[in-house]
Length: 218
Image 1 (cartoon, rainbow, N blue to C red):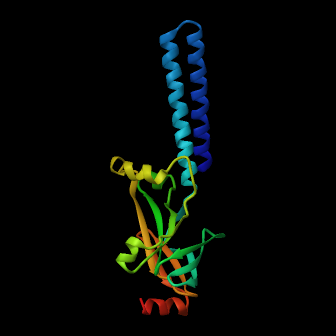
Image 2 (cartoon, rainbow, N blue to C red):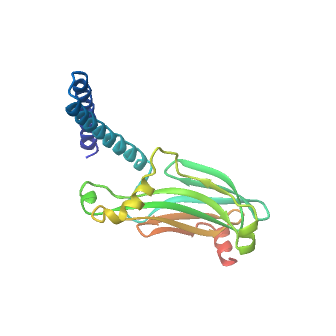
Image 3 (cartoon, helix red, strand yellow):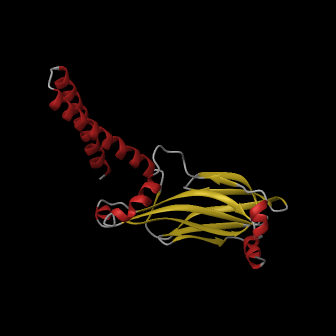
């Protein structure tokens, strides 16, 4: 299905170029109306091909989800009061290390669910981690203390999640939902958590004694 989609996209781009150059040639030969309409038609086809290409490239930064599955592990080591080094492992071999301030950690993800014709084409639920951040138990500290967060989403030319989120109401036959999901638990020295994801969102569970002790004292 991927090869068919690529072939169709290349065909649309080539057709757009042919139509555009034909329109420009007609303009040179002194046929302004036909030349302008052909040139505009070619530009529209090229724009559609470019837009779909950017959308596909951004969607490739997401992971497929078919059932509840482990998607990440996060481990903490204390650096000081309300100050921790976090090590996040996800996506097979991706590792992020960052320092977080606060009492709790929060992991956020973006999720896109398809339906109808999209499912027939083989599109599955997609997800991409958005950011890892620290948070404080105290509302006063949350307002005034140091905040820390690291972005997990790659920089792309087109933000497909925002586009899908805006178009969801107009494409109910294609999109089931586009939403954000987050989970948060306490940070503690040596604590390790496993994060799983289902079509309903993220869920974190303690993986060792330090994490279980942190939950008991939470």
